[in-house]
Image (cartoon, rainbow, N blue to C red; front, side, top):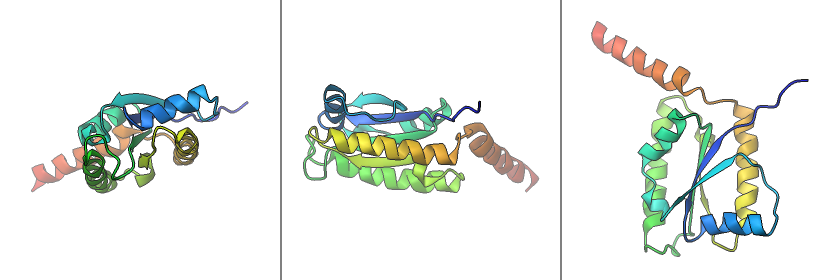
Length: 153
């Protein structure tokens, strides 16, 4: 019997909206993939790109950043900051050869447990299709090549 690859997805969820949406999905018994490892942050704008990189280095295959809808942030413009960081992070990861689908941004209010659940299911399937990240093979190998090129120059 062949085993199905199960990706690990780290979710940075805004305390005020997305984390409560996940809680609502649980209390409403909405079924979704158990691959999400939620981490509560006070605001999606608080998610530093280093947190995402650390999640990948620690074995995550994907990262979901979820926050309040634009214009509804409890910290006024934290989610706009998250969007800017997300855009730059995806470009950096792309340069390292990491697929864009591995980092996703979602807006989900506290009452949108079904939207969060659907996003987790969709992301789980996308990451499953991509396979394991293998951070060491992709990023560390490219860093070694860069160091080697610098030494040869």
